[in-house]
Length: 480
Image 1 (spheres, rainbow, N blue to C red):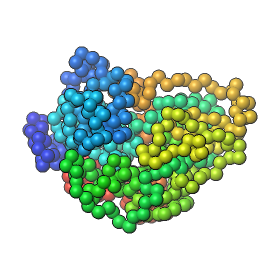
Image 2: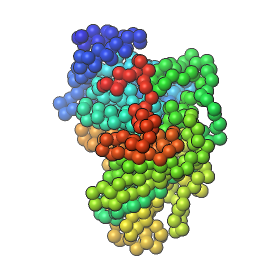
Image 3: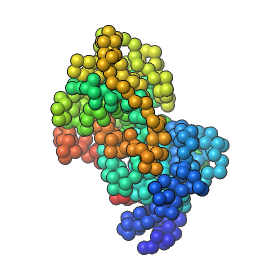
Image 4: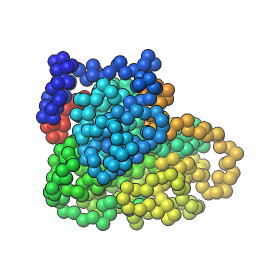
């Protein structure tokens, strides 16, 4: 099947499934990449500039924040906007600021019609729908900036890591602290041996979450679908649910079928640098130590999860314990002092974050030194204060970030930097969190084989690594 026929076939929504199957069968995904858009150095030749041609999928809520952050770099041409509820109140700020950018409700139609104009995409949509968008984009040779966590299931994340390598694209997960002070400090302090032989990490997020106080005994009842919403496309990889406003505009975070709870939402902002620079990889055990208000539908009201990592080279085994829930406060050292707070940390999308009483954070127990830290880009402090003063003259110089997270991605698209939170780096972190979500879902202790990547003691939990079976129109994304 020739390329022009594939593009013609893709023109109607009813034939998109056949279009994708045709691309898979013929290997045509690569020939749709518009090489004429690129200069000799691989940068984008857009209207005589050196800007990156960016399409944004999701332009409301968090997606809107990403649009504005990319715009602030001065390095992008917005060539397409896509949102399943295009024109809804939460999309208005972006649409008013950029009224002439082509608009779509279905990302597949966007790629069908605008693929030749797109070099990179921003994926700022609910967790469960990251996978098909990112996989299609990478298969078409597009660079991908994807909000965290990367995917909904262990398998999806595995395939996204493989696609990043296979299609040789820049792929960045949107945990922005990975381009701020904490990233460069943690890297410098581990390389200098300030942080070494860590055996225990306490990580916590005790702010109010959307599902706190919710009591459900089933999925939500059907409501009329708003005329502006493409509900079928919003569902993407999820199993079918009737529309209910209790699933959209961030409410999806409450449900196992759509979100990843407090762990998936905040873990990538709290222990991401520890995971990378201590080379944690995947755990051998994940234990649901405490789950208050367990439900098969929504996340627990409070969770304590224990992740156990084996020795890695010369580094000793390490236990990471996660605490969430309003009153499920972690045990902190007596000399902890005041919490570490970064004023740039955004508040939860719903609820409150009391940065004076119990902001999110971590305690890292290393050889000879204990560290306290916050979330996102906030830097570590040595405790107690007397020890911090003693160590002050011995600490290495920490370089400043040359680029924020969005600029880092754009420079990676141009081959000038590497993504600091590439899928290869962020993938195992997200898979670790996905194992925690499975433990929450089944309310059990899981034993995990790092070599075979299987849960060995719980058949149902092991099957959950694959995620839910895809509906017929979406199963092909696992083959890209």
